[in-house]
Image (cartoon, rainbow, N blue to C red; front, top):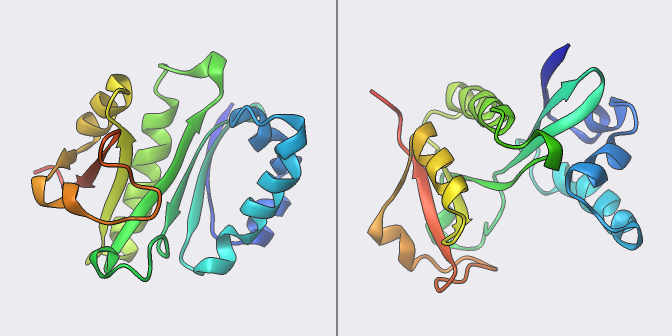
Length: 168
């Protein structure tokens, strides 16, 4: 049985059985970095109360997740009224089966209804053709003016910036 959930708080996240352990499997986190992942995820909701994590579980096992972040680059004027997808991951053996698509669509739908004036954006590795195709299929587009943004950890030589455009 598959289930999609929207986690809107640390409490929601911690109510999920073994969430940190399961997330570390999805992210393929090395054991020595699990405490960092735990710290990061537990503080994700503190940076902005509107942040969400969308998860897809199959038979109680975490398969895919996406983080939608309102505060990433908050000091950067260019990020005003933008929601940045700061992570999308699917467990290795379940990739290319539509799980990431379902997680993304659930997050986009949830946020678009609650924050219609915000743009949903993301960075993507220029060489990750499969990801770029997925994002384009979902309605994300490259806008040349966005490629000049000055975001923390954004390397214009390796990454593209994409914005969600509502399909008509």
